Amino acid sequence: MPATIASGPGAGFVVPAASKAERLRSRDLADHAIPAGREEDWRFTPLAPLRALLDAAPADSELATLWTARGAAVSTLDGDDPRLASWLLPADRISAVAYAASTEALVIDVPPETVDARVDLTINGTGGVSYSHVLVRIGHHATATVVTDHHGTATTAGNVEIDVADGAALTFIGVTDWDDDAVQASTHSVRVGRDATVRHALVTLGGALVRHAVDVEYTGPGGDATFLGVFFADAGQHLEHRLFIDHAQPHCTSNVEYRGALQGDPSAGPKGIARSVWIGDVLIRAGAVGTSTYEMNRNLLLSDAARADSVPNLEIETGEIIGAGHASATGRFDDEQLFYLQARGIPPEEARRLVVRGFFADIVGRIGVPDVGSRVLRSLDAELGAGDAAFAALAETSDQEPS
Image 1 (cartoon, rainbow, N blue to C red):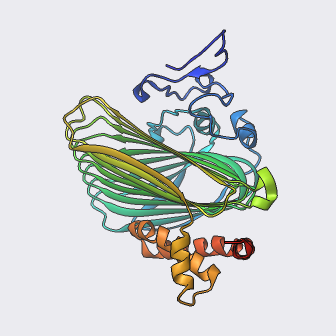
Image 2 (image 1 turned 60 degrees about the vertical axis):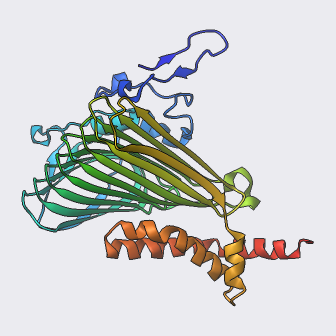
């Protein structure tokens, strides 16, 4: 368990648990202290925008949710309804606050053997503090797609529980396209059944501060899970993604790939910095023989006022695995590609847009839902368009510099 150094040169610093297997998980809010910012799980995160959520401020607003469903039942239940049968054990304070404060849960049920179910949730914030709980249950040997799309503004915390039964297949896509002043912290708790297949994708575009945590466990052998992420951080935005994949079952597979672009505003000083954080933790326990896992994060810096922190971690307790690896790369805009396109008569802003589109195109295609992929590419084009004036000014300045 984590411990705090009481005295001496390191007084106040929190010593992390020796293994992710030992991390604190509890529904009791009293077990989760308010972080000071020195804890490993919080050292990259600005705490001031999250203060209302960390202090468990009472909700004074609700998220308006509309849905369409085919082949699935969507309902709401009181937060203390025993039919929820929640397995969620919060691993941080905000998740525990959301668990305690949610007065109702939105439940998506896909019956066993259902083919190609589809549920679309449009979630709109109207300001204020709010909490939410979503439960997605996919019956055995069913196939389904669930899409959530967030808009508006809010200071909100929520938990999403995803239970994919044996032999089932789920594509889950979460799009975060908040207004510029929104603050969100969410935890997605994913259970992958025996021989089940999960494709989980997060698209993070809007919000002043967005922190997504994804916790994954396998409940039987043969599970196959893919986790994809697309994010674009503008000036003043902080976008954070944290994954913990717990391999405790044999012969399971996990693949992770997150790609992000960051477009800050150098003229705005510290307030113009675009910031992203990606943490990828994979634990392969002693009994998880035959595991295959790989995780990758790639970040593209479009201006000098951009910072991307990327921390992949592997913890392996058995040597009897198929393979385990990770990679991380952060680089600046490729001037050679830009020059190549401009030399063929393409204007600078359009050339820049094409290069960034190419950076994202593969992973957006892998989401596997064409209408969502098109919507994401349109949103990325809009994000790039907002920065074209600054880019043009920068390019003009660069052209005037002596060679």
